[in-house]
Image (tube, rainbow, N blue to C red; front, top):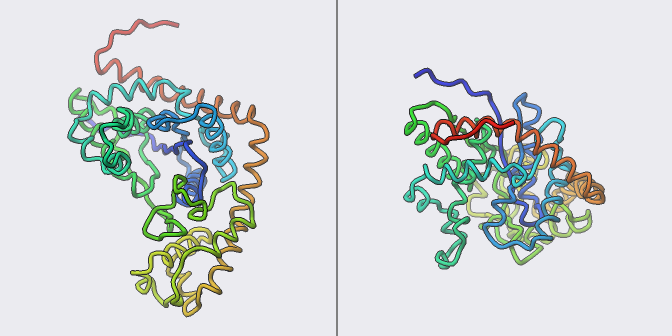
Length: 342
């Protein structure tokens, strides 16, 4: 069988289930915007079907979806250069999700560490949707024949599962239809940690607002949170090796590197021997310079929710134009009888 040459295409998404943070910006949005300059088609999705795997207040979910869209655009995602939409407007995600549920094996799903982390000791009480989340994520990716998936390192396992599902589908039906997407993990701060605990990921669900920088924070709040971030009493070392057992210090160095475009090694070299009394103000100034324009632009965009809805609707139409033929071909491969209407 001749291997299919798939058109390079990037797909990635974020749940609109809470406010966007510095972690979302450095780990995803900043990189999403940069990918627009690489000459590859980019598709970015607000995965609201994933959001409801845990209960969401309907009005708040609508608000958060619009806010997330504003955050994408304020961070540099241009909806005329990329496809930007919310998942529920393209029903093919759910349709392909069901087909892939029937391809994925129970043992594969049981190995998903993120489900174990989220379910904890209450696995019997969580939704079936949360358990099947990785299969729907596979559908999100394969529905567009995406070849590259920018993700944080905590999502790499889900992309690997997507490859397993694609390979099994192709094998079972004797086709070379779905590509083997590659996870794209890069950058100095793909995993931004809490400002209060350098061993934990920065999270919008953390009860302490001081643990994170929200993209809606104003300049004063950003600066204050950086200055109050947990650190240690030692000065910055001359090499990264000296940060090995200093998670809070390493986190702040990574954040500076990612915001400035420098390597972490260069940041350490610049501030070697200096204490956090000097480093934190420099980081605060940099963070304010990079993030407060995003906050301002988000506020402007959120003042016109109808325009955000229009942009998401246009993006959904463009996404549908790619997704529907791929889903139709999937249905044909599987053996579904379909009348040709319209």
